[in-house]
Image 1 (cartoon, rainbow, N blue to C red):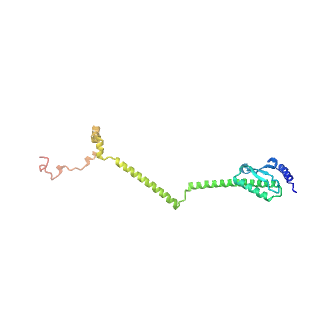
Image 2 (spheres, rainbow, N blue to C red):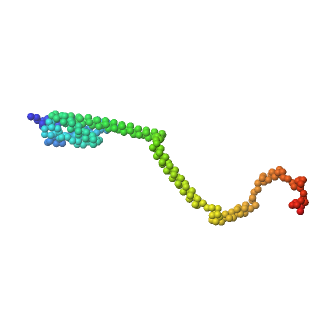
Length: 242
């Protein structure tokens, strides 16, 4: 007959010596304890961690122990789910043998994988951001490739803006035409225009300047003298001698 209590007691002593800093007994009946498992340090010394709680069933190790995630750090919900599935699989495969060390080792390896996945995911995110920045820079210098679709979209927008500008200009011209006065209306509204020319001459007075250079060449003009005309008749009708 198997002495389950003896096997459980021996395993507890072994676990306490293997995990002196992370093994904690919660109760003795039924035997219950926790073991904290931490991954190896990843990028920037980042780690993930979980504390596993185990409780021996009456016939352990012929029956699987009870287990749960007691606490965790930096794990996603899907990571927790994967760890629980891993524990179930390992417990099933190791029935009949003390298995806590095996379960903890499997979880340790899983946490290391998670850290590697975090590193890979961050590297991919970094590459994606660099790619997006590079594509944005290319668009800045090379512009957007012209396709039929974006050209038609641009043309429709351009035509609409052009039509709006024409309507606005026509409206402004129409308004300006309404506000423009005819010559008659100007005289009717401003009586100073009636005497503006006369006032100009009065203001000028005797200060009207004449450009004498316009008359300097008068002496060089060949003007016909009436007395030099052989047909001139001073007593002819219409002459000045009368």
